[in-house]
Length: 291
Image 1: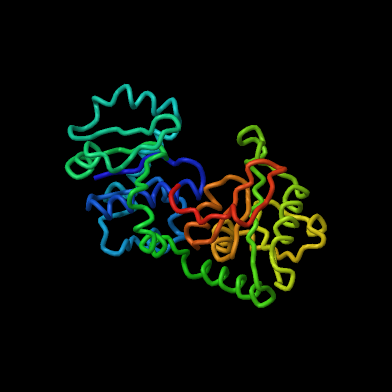
Image 2: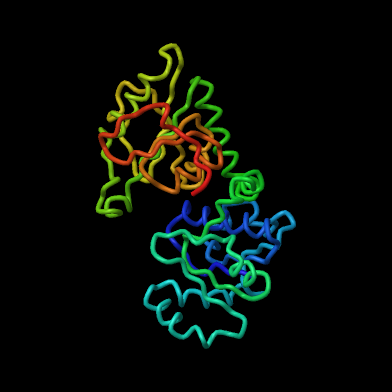
């Protein structure tokens, strides 16, 4: 059995982490529990109901969900460091597994699979990956991580309204908030940066096509900053914005697992703006399948 004990990052990070473990568990048939996702559980079909389509996957590590609170003790790096030092005190047959640095941990390793099948593994981190099987289980993952009905309906209504007025819909992820300090603000782009990129993209699409840009942001936007572009604002709900992006024909935004998940889920070609003056080329948009 494997238990995911570390809350790493926000929604995109946790979706990818959970999905890679689900794909691996589906492939190899071991039990999986993910109490680290409980904060987001109400927003998705499988996690809100506990129905993972017959897979041995559940949200809580213990029969009494209240006992999951014990994992609060390992969220802080210093507390986890103390746990690692005292790992020998864990119950027999329990393995503490942490990803190291920026290197992916391959979930197909025989030693890991043996432990997952026959012992208890406490997984701490977010770079655990099964890139061998992730895309193959894409249809299953999209089914399990579909938004619950109210948010799914809100997304469907938004996209229907936008598509009634457009031949091509480009989803734009304008991430502010925490990006003011993330990587020293390297990806905290101003409105002019996004507007320049969108005008450049619009110029590469056929002139006769009606192109609409669906703007999704965690801050209020000024329509005036995007003069000359046909724009629509998304609902502003963090789940609805992600899945609205998934329903677009193209996605553009700064490097983020948020837009990467949208691309994977909706099979929508994505381009990450790695720098403010980056040239925009339609040929650079690719569906994201293997983070």
